[in-house]
Each structure stands twice: as structure tokens, then as C-alpha cells.
Length: 115
Image 1 (cartoon, rainbow, N blue to C red):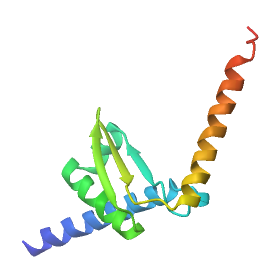
Image 2 (image 1 turned 135 degrees about the horizontal axis):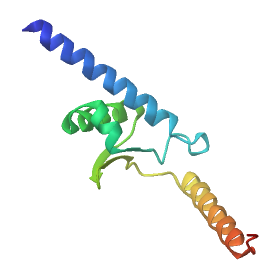
Image 3 (image 1 turned 120 degrees about the horizontal axis):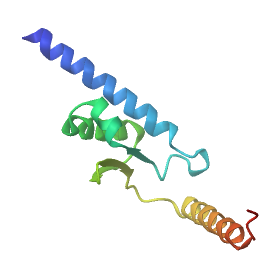
């Protein structure tokens, strides 16, 4: 039986490493590690294994990144979120970026469309 436990442990460690890599890649450098999120679709989840194992591995990967990790399953998608308190300077930067994105959207939606 120990060989089976060792195999399961290695499989879990690979899953944690994969999720940590995906979570790290999703971070925006300007936010200095805050506002982390990862969204895994149904296909991703099916490929990674059982939901309870993926959630546990995601929480472990988040701990390695310094996140206060929560997971939420919504409509077949798993949301992995960093729920830490965000410093005011980064919160302001993110708010400015969101406002600029909304301004661009509104400007583009008012332009006449050439068909």
C-alpha cells in the first residue's frame, strides 16, 4: 500500500504545482500579487481529477503564493480567488484601470458601425 500512497502524493504535488503556475501567470505585475484569480472551466476540472482534490490543491497553491484562498463552484466553473485585504494604493490603481476600461468600452460603443 505505501506505493499507492506515494503515487497519490506525487500526483497531488503535481496538481498543486500546475495550479500554482496558472495562478501566478494570471497575476498582473502592477498589482504586486494582489487581486489574484483563476477560473477553471468544466473541461479543465475533468482533466485535473476530482473536484475535492482540485479545490484542496488550489488552496495549497494559494498558500504558497501568500493568498487567502477561497474557491467557489458556479455553473460548472471553479473560481479560485485571493480574498486578502488589498493595500489602498493598489486598490486605487485597479479602480483606475477598471474605469479606463469602461471609458474605452463606452467610447467604442458610441462609434458608428460600418457594415
